[in-house]
Amino acid sequence: MRRIAWCLVLLGLVACAESPDSEATGAAEPPVSVTPVVEPVEEAPPIPLPADGFDFPVGPPDARKYYNAQPFGENDHLGDDWNGTGGGDSDLGDPVHSIAGGIVTVAEDFEAGWGNVVRVQHNIGTADAPELIESLYAHLDSFYVAVGDTLERGELLGTIGNAHGAYWAHLHFEIRDTVDLPLGGGYSPVTTGYMDPTAFIRSHRPSR
Image (tube, rainbow, N blue to C red; front, side, top):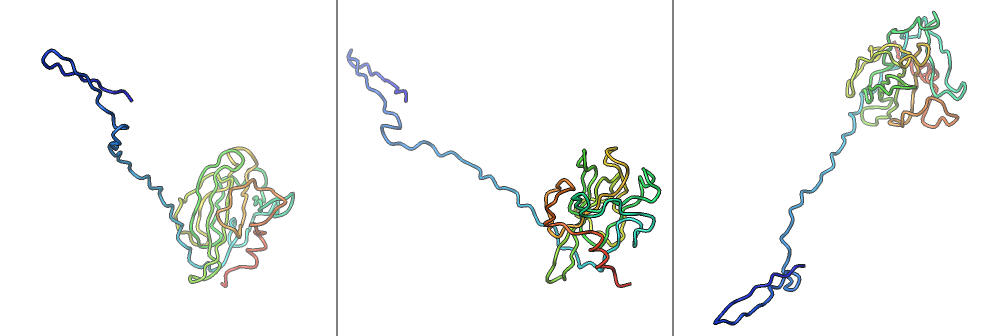
């Protein structure tokens, strides 16, 4: 470090000395105040109430006037593709319903390939011992829910779309037994975390 020279003129004599720096004297540098960075803690979504049964997402409760154009497992499909019986874009804008009571965890436009997507968590266990699964509704033309909304079985959550013109209008629908998986690609020979939606709904109908 730079040393500061000083000189004293006394009785015609010049005396010079160097002022020692902090390194030489061991003097401590003044403390620097540092504000700790506190990372925000993301709260887990609340646990949904136990579901009282499951209906189909279109034409509820029994998918009347719709057909499953590409069932789970066909061509490594990870869900069901629900189409109106009129074909083409005849079902564009038709209502899409929550298959059971649950809580919305995703409501977002993922653009190319997926379009508008809504994901809902459901509890197939009990209030004391919850068992969570997830339903996913994709290619929606519109959605009317937000993250954190509580839905009832059969409640309107959006409308059938075509992923912003990528496909003929239809509902890509999945049920996952592992919640919060990545969005994925809709197709895979690996089905871990996914269930056959139609088989699941048929085995979990409400007791009317």
